[in-house]
Length: 438
Image 1 (cartoon, rainbow, N blue to C red):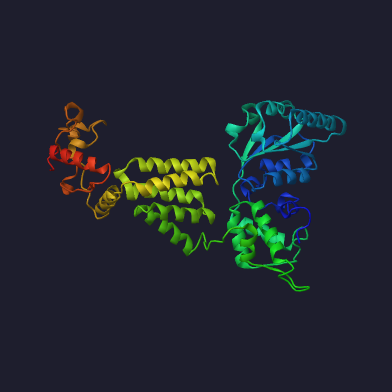
Image 2 (cartoon, rainbow, N blue to C red):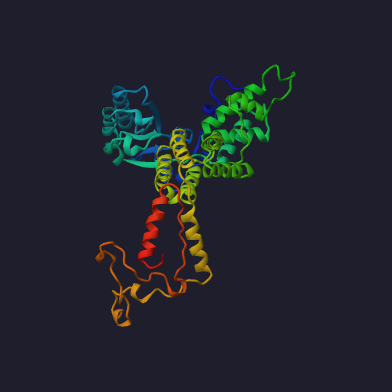
């Protein structure tokens, strides 16, 4: 069923037309499409650095470009290649260009693993056009690739494949002669499970499909001449992972995120971490989880612990910066912090109450002494007259009217005696007494 070569390798696209996803890089006239143009195979072309998560098609794009353009293709791995290997490739590429007019594409995987000296060895060939370098990395090139090489290359960012992209690849692998060649059927639930477990990684999806097909085709499962049917149980057995019932567009998606936020609000840290784990294992978008944590920090915690919002935003930034699976760690840190800290929704209630008043027409004119007095003629209208500058007072607070006449005495923010908001409550009482509102 699987053959000696892994399914993910056998199913590599042989042309750019077969590439799933990355359509933002494959528009007509884009650098990749221009480089793949056979008519330009003897012309000088710019080198590229492809940056993206595993399984998004970096190697696939490089090979498809070489095939489409008719250029010579050489592949090196930064894990095994050294400076000597790089120099030999450069010399051979120069010979091919000068003797036969043949340009060379050098594909270098995992370039972030190259030392500075190894990357320096690439510079003469790239700068003089001996090779067209297509380098791949899963790490931020700004930190992992030397500046001279970055300045001589185009940086192209690959995105995780969508569920639709993964589905196309799975369907193609089931039917294509290079793949399962129609010798197995795939149930819809199994297909959905493979898509979910892939999390945007084409290699992971095809590896899971191949393993599940082997399970389905086991002799103890089949009678003679019976076509194997791949089920979601086969997928679970193949990947050694329980299949969560979780639809990122359906009820389970909303139920789990609701339980997650309510567990944080209810200060049940164990339940919150459980639901976080369910979302991570189901392939939920970590950015969605991070956004919900930021909202929770503002809505449910507020000034009871102002540090909660700082931590939630930092977790969101960390996830965007390092990606998954490591992103689960800052997500867990923020979840634990938010679930165990003091809670107050006073700021959330305050803004909603103020918005309700404004929508109901309760806004009135800004008091004259608070109006802008900087533009010509403003002072003749009395703008700013009688305004008292708080910093001229030792307490930094002076009694004067701030709300419009129609809203005098209206209070929106009502702090709770919880956490850090207890101090805010005491301070606010003193402020309101000075302002004459106590």
